[in-house]
Length: 396
Image (cartoon, rainbow, N blue to C red; front, side, top):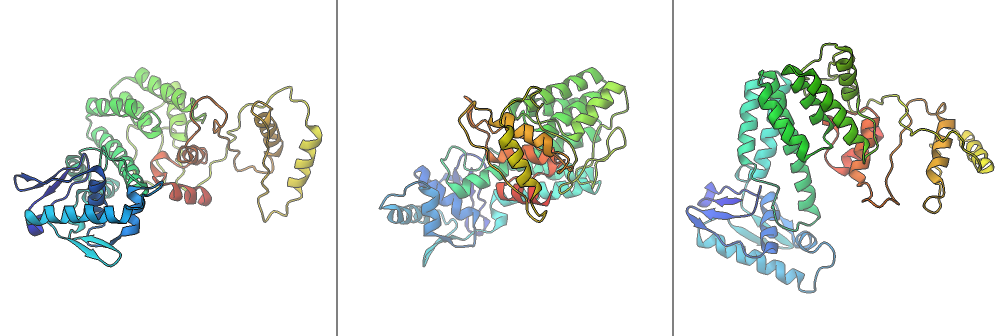
């Protein structure tokens, strides 16, 4: 929603379905593509957005011949609509456009800053301050960025990052509720949260802790087991160290820490272990079970073993196994991986990308998340964007 007050008091909101108001007057935003132009300009308030960038956002696949002319029309329509109500100005410059807004006048950067400040306050033990900041952020959240619009690459990436930040804010709210002893509120919040986002491992762990704190260890154990089943299908990954430690503590009847600090260098667990931070590799074999009666391909296996053994140690040898679906590529690769496990003692990773399955192939971002979890990176410290996840994996 976009609210515009007069002149320098303009307040632009892009979280949710786009609307614009100036006082009590609702401003016409025009077509969906015209609304995308406004979103792009508002998110770059005070900075020039090139015409090429606008064309790429509005027509990411194949822009029409009239693309540049259409962008000029959309920007002109918005400029005239705002001028009639004394709203923020849209300036046409060589090669692009600029809207006269600052970050303080747009809800998206305000929301991001509030969540960041709340996280910092929580890590410093300022629970009440963190709660107040999160409440302000939640009031700004009216839905995904430019909800209902078919976004291009820039807005789609920003929308995904904001969605992730919103989910993290919900989980931080649950931590605050637990810290303040409001277990029933935390359970209600997290139950809806994991139902809507079943692959949020940290949320499952928080729900288990909340149930335990509420005097329901059986419910806590059920929450852990449910999370393990969800992660195993379809991602095919083992639960992280937090869930595994929780599971064991609940089985043993050991004390369970009900809330963990968000920004600790190592989050304390019930057994006194620490959860590794990003960049810390956790040893472990994540390979599927090897085929007990593996036969054939002996010559090929020995040749690949010899080639890998001959590597000088300064490079990482990579071999690709190619073949038709069902020809045994995975079984062969896993067989080799077990034979090579001693050479790569830090960890052995595995992920099924479902390339030939009837279901949808695994998204690259989800694949990176699964691999980072296998490396011991806590779910709350996995970056939200694809490039940062790749760099995090390289650092690990």
